[in-house]
Image (cartoon, rainbow over the protein chains, first blue to last red):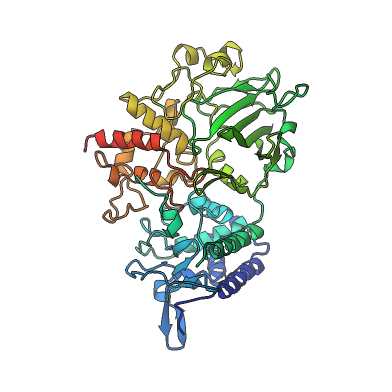
Length: 198
Length: 350
């Protein structure tokens, strides 16, 4: 399968699927405050796996049965050592494309790279707080107050979860082994670039 | 890809997000009047839009940069009430307090923001979009209104969403950011970027004290008006600018406190950062990497090296993914950039 190009309909279907499963999974949850930390982590693992977080935050590889997430690099985001080539020209009905790893996306917003969700302090979520994580999913802004979270991250679907479920997701992510992987900063669309000057 | 196709695609993605997003507000604009004229800003018995004299104008000495908007601000305390100033950095306003801020570009009023204290810990946040005839302004949706006025070629002013309002206003234990002891001090900073000259009718610490609107009475706020402690005037102005334009989110009470960038100026010694704020800027590195800088070597401020100072590099940017502040502005603040650039260049490397 060639994944150099993905059509908007594919993206919409993907996001719809992701949104749907989060909505179905996000029913009233047992309060994490009453559960053990281990139970919260287990709940978070369930939500992360069911919510397709690995679809973008884990680099994909070509396996014996076709493309699949490389779980040896689970949730580490776009590999820092993978230098992306210039974005392909997109025309007509083709408006969004993804890299082979599914960790770099280009579209009308520019180029986005999926985040390292492991608790590495320098390159991942190691210095994030639970409150910061919740606010990010509630507001669509980086760390709850910063730049807008870019497509294809369906933060608006995660926003459908209860606070307790988002806390469980965060607890699970924080329980992962930290992996140092500095994901590149997003690349703004060309017309936004001209706004930057000294 | 053609621009209109780009716009459609962006609109599709953003629209999907907006449609699915659930309201997170408990003190949103739902309880606000539909029209600005119904909030009490204007005198009821006057013709046209005459400000009710009970609404008192004021002007903070370190104003927030909003792309050069001309701003007017008014505060109204319920009759017979006072502001609790026991905590000098976090004034507690009486229930019923109302405050407005009007934004204009050229001779056109564009937006007026409104806060009303409804209970001991409950505020209504609302913002109003002015009509074309400039006769009134209508309550804006909680998702905001994009592109309401072109303020430079291809650059548009947008009315913020409620979430974006809260990004700053809910980041400290006081919701009113521009009406503080430091901002109303009569010891005004002559180097503060974009500061307006005080007009005789504007509220200051002195007028508040004279009119006995502060509890407890704090004569020292008049005899020794507060100012930012700094070794020189330019550092004072830089810290004041950063306090308003960055400290709204980057303060010790915000969810971003763990980042270690504490830029909100504090008057109460017990609230002050244990570290010299300038020294802290030198020591800390930013997780955000300066392009072409060595990995992990992006200090917030590198003395003598403006281009290796993440704080300034982000101030200079108006790219959506990089700029600081990340919201509320689409144009560079040239005056502030010049101020901070000169300050960093003259700092001695340590």
